[in-house]
Image 1 (cartoon, protein in one colour):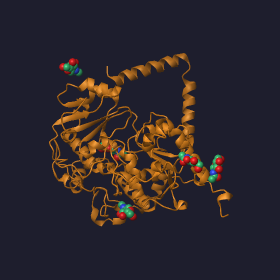
Image 2: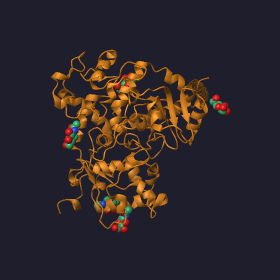
Image 3: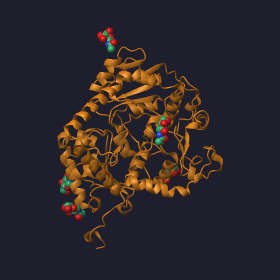
Image 4: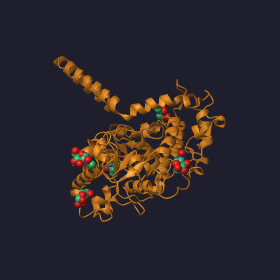
Length: 489
Ligand SMILES: *[C@@H]1O[C@H](CO)[C@@H](O)[C@H](O)[C@H]1NC(C)=O
Ligand SMILES: *[C@@H]1O[C@H](CO)[C@@H](O)[C@H](O)[C@H]1NC(C)=O
Ligand SMILES: *[C@@H]1O[C@H](CO)[C@@H](O)[C@H](O)[C@H]1NC(C)=O
Ligand SMILES: *[C@@H]1O[C@H](CO)[C@@H](O)[C@H](O)[C@H]1NC(C)=O
Ligand SMILES: *[C@@H]1O[C@H](CO)[C@@H](O)[C@H](O)[C@H]1NC(C)=O
């Protein structure tokens, strides 16, 4: 019996059992009431609803596109559409030479221009015209490209971050300083974020014009600092927050809701144990973003992509022969990975390696159609960014992972999400992907990858700018005015 039908069977049994017991309606009614209250609370407090509200009311300023002419770029005005803007969404630096070559097992996959052919041509029926005149292409990598482009430009123009300074003789300056080295390793995203942010135009020295306040402590450095270590991180953070709360007026205005920190190592999660206001109010930008874990609050917090830093682009991303169906390599350190290896270790099409890889990792990623991201200790690994970098379609087997940039990117258009219980069906699921669909996945992979690349100084639509966009969506709009003691006197 398939796992899903087992589940259904089980829940039906439970349902009929509890109905018989007569205790069915009371909990259901209570649950319903609670949900309504939560919805009401969210509606009255959350930015997200207001953002959508604002989008709708800004719509009239968007050019209404003629149905059936989805990409007639010529007559559109550059400032609004962005296609002929200096940096277009599809103009990822370095991806153009690659997109000329044919894809694997399907029709040629092309970039900007060819993509129009694909979307407007054979997949033309997938285009939808929304009632309010918004053109939405359901094969696009973005949920709504027009809204994203427009908001991105607004964010890019106006968004300002204030970074809390520290005294020159602060004994923990090493933890707070800007990053002056080349970030490396598995948790490089944390250092790259700080490095790239400090080199960006988002920084302001004037806290009164800041949208958000950045607490620049590095979880990675705290972890390795012999004076702090894993055991001392919680106390350090508590003291840090107490200090900025006392010395500056900004924290108290919002209870920390316009403050954020960034961490890639999962230890960051427990680091806030003694600073509950950070956990409850501040925006936590973390790699280990799981719906399942308390301490991570979806929508308030944001997912930071875990990226193994690489320079330049690999050659032959699209023209390489992808002969293998799927590939995984890594330590078998979790029940999910055990399950994967148990099911597929001897398979001739799904390569699930454990122990040392004898071939080159990059060759495997270039030689496979699908690359598996499988939950280890945490939901996050660098494998999603690895797959995108090498043009391989990611398969995500990590239940409850709040995927990076899910507010913007339509993950179902460039990846396959498989629940852990479906691991035995993996081959069937992947084989059912038609060559047309695979081509769409792959051409979207080529568009999504720029959002997963860091640069020492930010480049439009790269990882830093996209995280900035996520932060912009979460910026606070409500602030308690400063008390008299911080007023004019
Ligand atoms: C996301 O992509 C899938 C696959 O292309 C598509 O079916 C779906 O309609 C898209 N969703 C949105 C909101 O565009
Ligand atoms: C974002 O801002 C930078 C710096 O002002 C500018 O160079 C760049 O063109 C902007 N990008 C977009 C897409 O507006
Ligand atoms: C907080 O301030 C005190 C007093 O200035 C200082 O000794 C301590 O190092 C600070 N702690 C942190 C974590 O910034
Ligand atoms: C902020 O509030 C805390 C707790 O009420 C208080 O101890 C602190 O002095 C306040 N900070 C400022 C700058 O007024
Ligand atoms: C894979 O091969 C090993 C060794 O030949 C064998 O012990 C194991 O049962 C096989 N596993 C599966 C899932 O076929």
